[in-house]
Length: 84
Image (cartoon, rainbow, N blue to C red):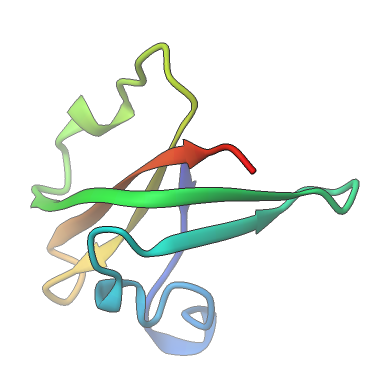
């Protein structure tokens, strides 16, 4: 899971997260310089205390988390790992 702010001075990385669509590819580079590709499967908006988003299955997946509705809710993107 990766979480980040969307607004104010700390929002550069997740500012436009809400523009992702199903099938879009998210690229992550690890500290060794390896690039990992994930495909957006779905998204949802949940309450600020909804802990169900922390559940991870057996598959390699990525969950992106940021604020929504002026910080009163959470925008969640679910992505699956794509082999090269």
